[in-house]
Image (cartoon, rainbow, N blue to C red; front, side):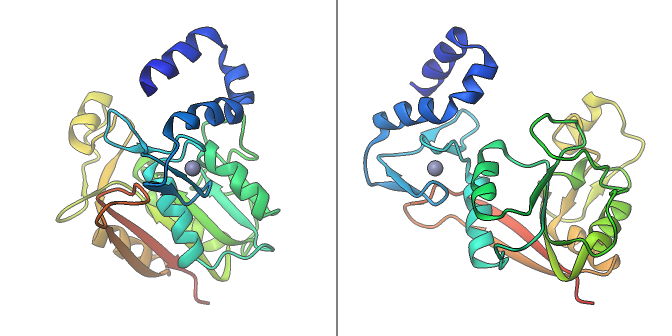
Length: 247
Ligand SMILES: [Zn+2]
């Protein structure tokens, strides 16, 4: 039903109208999912079920959060000690989470190298145009797997973080060792080897941790596995790295 609803609305309304009225459209949609069986921890609403997408992800009918958004939101709350006065930098942020960050954190800055019109900045993560020790927290989700010189990017994250600051980092992961091969450059080959046309490697959890360690971070790895009932619609398995700048 959701796919039909989405296609129908897209046919009727231009994209800019859709984005402006997303809140009201989702509010109407969520009526069809009234219930108490599952709960979204981002918009704090309960439903009969999540919307099951073709890629098996669980979409919140009300706020549009996906499984990884809800896990990140929970992680920020439980592990990352965000404070209202923190300066926060979010690389490649999710459109649906932005409005929740804006509400809670006045010093929340968004950046996207692709010149996304919704973000504040277009920083190159390998050369961030900010002084040393600028941010208290950084969110770097699904970015490093796109970056050829990832060690430079990690050094830049370290440089712009304040002492005691931390970065929340996630990428797709593989078992075993990190896999990369600079000879693989075409989109077709990258899709086949790394899982997406614009990915340049696939990290292992340990491999990513070691690279972050090598630029000075102290890294904690948090592993999550699906709980019975999956009340919050999380992914089956998910890893998040919390990289701390100690000095
Ligand atoms: Zn929600």
